[in-house]
Structure formats: structure tokens, C-alpha cells
Image (cartoon, rainbow, N blue to C red; front, side, top):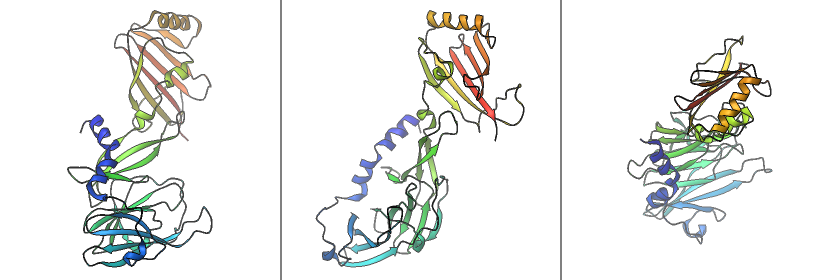
Amino acid sequence: MNKSVFLFIALNIVSIACCHSMGTVAASENPADYGVPTSAVFADENDYYKIFINEDQPGEDIYDVPISSLWLYDKESKQASKLFTTVEPNDMYWYVSDDEQGIEVPIDSIPALFGAIAYNATRLIVSGVPDLRNTYSYIIDIPTRKAIYLPCNAGVLGFTSEEEYIVAQSYRYATDPEIAGRYTYIQVFDWNGTQVASLDLEMNYIDNGMLENYLDYNFNTKLKLTDYKDDRKCDFKFPSEEGEQRCWEYIYTLGDWDPRDAAHFDNLVATDKNWKKTKDGYHYTGPDPDNLFTLDINIDLKNKRIVLIHGAIKD
């Protein structure tokens, strides 16, 4: 699928999900009318069920996770039943990585619960945050009480309108230490918890001004970041450096070369021994301004592109 089309779908998926399955959330729902604990909170409903979440045991403080239970009110039988109760989390994690295959887990092992999506007569999705940062999401098969952990860490957004796949998201950390921070990774799962499609937004997260920051110079020529290779994909190696290296590569396209930029880089060639003039433009190999990394910058005016590579000795 074209990435721009997929991203458009992903960004609008919540409205699709609401129309598809959630129904209208009634703020005035009285739990006592449905045979669930009076302290329960209405979470969602569809044509078959109303879903309520009850906080059975509050957390001791803001860092503690409450014990909660999920209740179903069957609209046909007009009976209520408790589907499961959460358990106290075993561990606290800074970051739970995403994956491509869901894992079947006992329904009585779910560590947190803050929301639910009533999908159809047999399936629902629940989510919770057991460690203040990672969202754990599960597919629940109601008749069999089987649960599948979805390997995403930032929750479920909704469903695709045609295939009825689950659209979820994770956060990842940029691998380049010069960037740092989190970016979004969109994931699409089938109902077995298998990832069938994805969209990595790391390059969209990267600041196009990174090249200018390295050079401490603002280009007059129009620049656009068009490709990026992290240290797992970049195979460039600096011959002057010993030890195992990590390198990151950024490729920019150029507009019409501005005479002011030509004058600037001609001056660098004349004053900085690390800058060389080539038959197609300019080339730099040497330390970055802070001497933390080694830099290789190739300004290719013939093909209208700039390739920036920076690297470091691998820890």
C-alpha cells in the first residue's frame, strides 16, 4: 500500500472504529440497572453487550495499579457476568518493545485495565497501563475466555473499514543519539494477533535541519530529507577509525544551487583542510563541530543531492 494512503487511513482510523463497532456511549448509564457493581463505570457497548469496568481495589498511591474487573451485560439474556479480574503487575518497565506476533496468555494474567472496545458477539479488545508508560492490549474471545496479547505498546486505534483488521501503534526511540526521542510505529494485526502491515515514521520524525546544525550554516538552496538509514542499515565505514563502528546516513535532495552557498563552500575549501572541492561539488571528512563523531558530507551538485554520514565507535 502507498505509505501516504496508509498514513491517511491510520490518522483517521478512530472515527472509522467508532462508526464500525463502538456505538454511542451513554453517559447516564446506571450500573445498578444491569446487575453489575454499583461502583462500575460504563466503558462501551455494541448490539450484543454493554461493558463495565469496576475498580475492585484502588492503588496505594499514584504509582500503584488498581485491581479491576470487567463485566458484561448480555442484552439478549439480560444477565450480567464478570469476565475477568486483573492481577497485580510483576514488573515495571521503562520500555516494552513491539513485535510481529501476538502471544496467547491466560485471561487471568492481565495486569491492568482502563478501557475496552466491544467489537462483536464473541470478541472484544481491552487495554491497560501497568507501569505508567506502556499500554498493554489484548484480544479477548468471550465464549472461550482466551486472551491474545497484542505486541504493541501504545494502544489500539481502531479497525480498517474493509478488512476489519486491528490498527494499533507503538512508540520507538530514534537510534541516532544525535536525535533521541520517541516516534510512532503504526501496526496492523489480524485477529490471531499476527502483524500483517506496518508503517515506520522514524524518517518523518527526523528534523530536516540536522544537516544545517552539523555545518552551523543555513542553506539558501532548498533542502529536503528524502532517505535515512540507521546504524542497522548503513554499511558505510570510516577508514580512519578503529574498532566497530555505528553509522547513520541522511540523504537530502537539492533545489537550484544558490550562488551564496557556492561562495560559502568555496571559502570553506580555502580555509578548512577537511573540505575538498570535487568534480561534482564538495566533500568533507573529519570531526563534527563538537568532536564527538566523525563526519562525511558529500555535496553532489551534478545529481542535486547531499549525503551526510556520521558515525561513532560502537559501545
